[in-house]
Length: 160
Image (cartoon, rainbow, N blue to C red; front, side, top):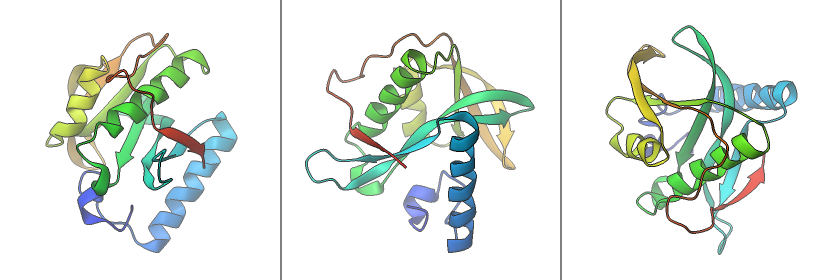
């Protein structure tokens, strides 16, 4: 994923092996501190790697927040799997973690991710600068449950 320029175009650019290793270590540390974080998602039928997503504690525009994060491999774009992953994560955040509010943000040019956020009930809050680039910040208030946007079961998730 981190070596695919298409996927990483909205995630800060292609990462070197060293950068990927630091990313993985930071996310494992997040799991140790918070008991949740990024997950791997695989296609049910084939077991192929679809993408990653999770709920992470982050600082956004100077505020401590819980972020809904998701990324989908280019081979799976256009199938609604980003929305399925995000919906499953929101259900988990509300039902298992008791989260009352979650943010999501993306580059201002990432229309597909913005559509996913809006379909899941996130509302545009404001423009921000994140990692030195212009982003949009969306917020979703209390998260008691979140139905799948398509009515289909979400992609199978595996911890890790």
